[in-house]
Image (tube, rainbow, N blue to C red; front, side):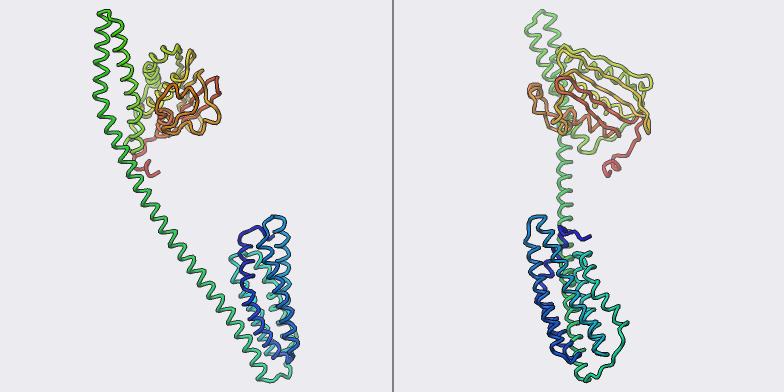
Length: 457
């Protein structure tokens, strides 16, 4: 079935409309040849008159089809155009049969040339609308197949007249072949130019991508170096602030001791932000490979819980922990798993007040052994429309809670990246006002892949 809305069908209609003059001119040459071979001018030019009127009618139908904008109107105009074109081709194919029956040897030669030229014309547009052109090829094909079955009549024809008629057929056929060759040449040249432009654009895009990757790598390496340099003096600030706080507490100077505590807390918060940038930039630069080892999962969770315990107490939160026996040991990169869990715990504590945070570790067996870490909270929850941007780097949700709590929007992004580096992923289920559950699934025994191979993947 022909799709009348297909752009290729529109292209074929444009080609038919544009080639009207050409077809009328070649038709005039064939009509002259037919009049000479049949020794009957009225037969040749009567056929040409009917053919010309039919072609002009096709031209009008083709223009109407191209100008229609409504779907139903275009279908109607397209169907009329197809039937009109088939009618014109049938008239065109009728002359070769008549020439074979009445024109003797020269008539058969001229008839073959006329029918063959019609097939050449069809082949010129086959790549644009194959189904339509295959349909259009039926009448001339039938004419060519019928010619050998028609009884041969030598006919008393003047040799010169017959030769001139065949010459008209040769000229018309060569004109069709030449036009086909020129159109094909133009088409090939267009394809070549388009391919060259596409190749140039692809090379340009690859160069720009390489430059962007190099710039991104340089940025990430710079951030990694800078965060390392910032950690050293900041650790010193935290250490001295804690010493001063202890001395002030011993002297009973509570107000100054609280001020020292604020200095220590702010420095720790800043250190946490620097750690996030360090983790993010290290992975972004592709310099942080896997360091798989035997990991005590229970101890890893206890350390992660201990690191957020003070912040949890300040918000009147309780933290519970459960580790299944089958999930107590894992062979993985403990550092990355700890960062992932710490980011999820920090996020839970940040957005939960006077609630419960539950951390659990389980063993799951699907196609392979999987370690499942779950962090659930009874916090503010996440709206469904915010889910798509949850793990995007440097992105905060637009809720009031996220604005009040602050942060750079890197925690969940880092957790997801770390999970991906371990061959797993982080998923989340949440309900606004009820709480959220983040689940980390990673292989219980990670397969160590070289950094270069992972970068290539």
